[in-house]
Length: 383
Image (cartoon, rainbow, N blue to C red):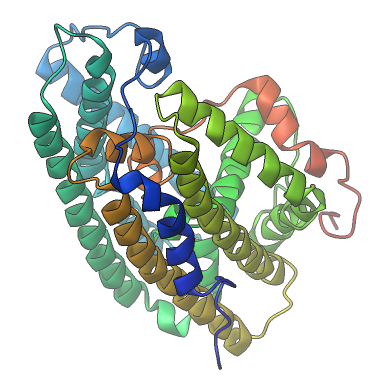
């Protein structure tokens, strides 16, 4: 089967888009100094609260939170029909192994953001050379963690024998239980949040918005929501996002229009690829939930999806290297960190989960409105 790339624009055109506006930048470096201390107040917590807990108290609280998270994970696994205890144990152990590395990455990420913020505070600012070392150490840890996760996934895939069980493989993938596809595919995070939200609502006795029998019926309900997401006006949203990104760059001191245009061109290409990957993901989720594929067809869909993700990863690496050279990140590590913190480059934001949404009752009702208002459809109809 020949894969159709999620990138419709040849790499050479992207490279031209990145280099074209930069011909004039070789002579004048942009001013990336923040214009005001207040500009960066939303990057990190406004008031840096001192944690007065002892190391033992912190460790105990982290352990309690970890156990609670694993109990919720087991409930989610059971709800979607993965009830085998041995399989659940393997998945729980796999997820547990991510806790400590993720905490270390989160600490490193916050240290970078704090140092980026402190550029606007003369008595706290560190030299660019020190900042570059701090950023480099964090990026090195990110690379190590990605390699560790890839190795860990290969191990659990072999233990569970996912190659011979495409339906289990697909279920674990679409709900983000194993693997790192969610770093590239935003739709997975949306489905995961819908499932988490439904559990919170059920525990609160607010609503019974998803089929209690779980399994295929639950996946079908989630697929129904995913399939409706295509009704939004994608082009208008793209325009809004581009304009918002330009404003954010300006607020953070990146004022030169040609530089902004280059960054927006890079972000636009990534956004288009994300939307294409999301569409492919939704096709798998809908096909799984509505039982549209045979095992062989489902395995083919999964293989193609993962191949496209790998292809996109390879493409982004080349595109990022081009961007890095043209913007001279080596001499401007703060611009490198700024674009990372805004989610324009890399996927560190997803990896450290610093933007994980807080679950609030009002938002939960909105998130699941499309399911709860249509419980009598054939997709979620109970026998």
